[in-house]
Image: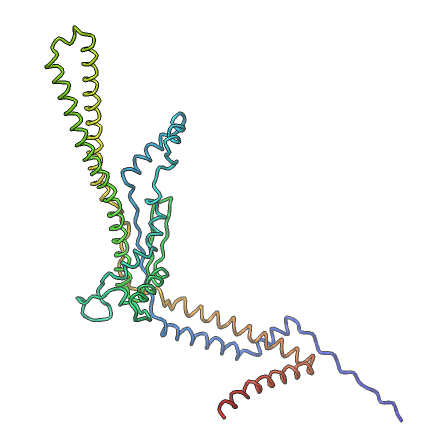
Length: 364
């Protein structure tokens, strides 16, 4: 029998970058479909997601009188005074932690302040009547009917939509508030600053008032002590007119006079501190300086079609190129190893068939 000559099939050409690029370009319909799908999803996002309006406010905390005094002393703490101020327990900066911008940034995120903000009434943007008002917790769309749970969800939502930023160098605190209603975003930011001011006023005023009340009571005691010392000295002089001729009476006169001088100095010192406390109580009323107030924005932060459309197109192109590239690699692998490709397709079809069996059984 004649020998059978077997002709070997030519080996497939390896996949190069040029072939891969050609395969991607041949699948241009896949890229177009991905771009169209990305644009449709972006359009649906603008319809489903509500608009987002953002406002930014900034304020600078004013230091109290005690902080100003500590700062003045700390500025002198150099050379020979450095050991003295460190021994007195004064810090390097002289500023109190509760008056730093970082403290106010944390205060804006506190539960107490956000709870008060949620219970504040604003003009309801959901109705046409501008005189109607509602609490912020009722304006926000919170999925709960329990009042306590609504407050809890509202606090978490405000902590996400109210961003704070503190700058120690400029001593400024910036607050960015976002909401679906522009008027609510502006009113919410201004109300938050008002609550910070009220909280600060309550704390500083109570502290200054307590100091003033204490000094007032101490001044009354010092006045009584001075009157007593003056009366004793006067009675001594009236009853002992010849005290200079007696060494014992001269010593007693010196003691009475020294007690009167000490009581007078104490009274004058307490009186000066009392007047300073009254001035501090008045000066600390100016708590924060608002640099930028919130104004209702006209243009929403979301959606921005100038960025959304190009971004969707670029994402669709990237997704389309990746899909076409993977399809090209898979086609080349199927051409090189058709047996393994058939096994993979059979395994996928078998898995799909097994997944459909329980569904049919449940329907039966």
